[in-house]
Length: 112
Length: 111
Image 1 (tube, chains in turn green, orange):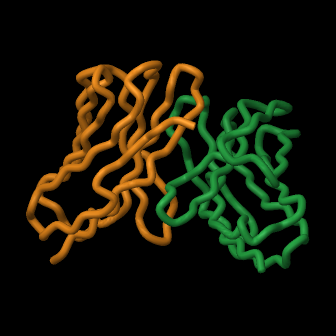
Image 2 (cartoon, each protein chain N blue to C red):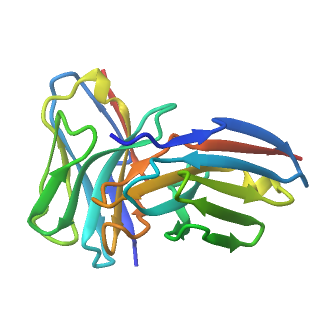
């Protein structure tokens, strides 16, 4: 099992560019989520999905889109990058929404 | 946005000493509380799942207690070792299942 994988590990964008952060899991987990981690603020939920075809907003969804066409994949799209989106992004998955989560290795994103 | 607070934000402890820190959460609509351990340059890993008032979990030298009526959980580290240095996160899950993380307590164990 690879667990939860994320690509890329590092990314630098210019303001206004768009990109997709990839997340995949091979544990057949129904629940997947995206967090951003900023200093002093812990992990904040961006979007989550309770199963293929179902997504919902978390605490800080503005500027991000998600889709869940398969159980395995949950990409996060930045529509028009802003410096405020400079952060470390973690994808996580769990069997159900209330189970403990398995985290990916993170993507460090810098927006100039 | 739920108010999940962890205190202190950071602490330093001498090797061999014991320590504890707190996660506070809304006492109403409790479903579960998770504790995670997050080492530098790694990803968070689950420590405990706590669901019942009065619950106590233990894993080696680390244990946790839960008081849902007053809305807090304590994490204890007995006989701290350098490998215990990490950030410890709590995650509160209310009845609507929308999880909120605290900002974490960063523990540094000095040899």
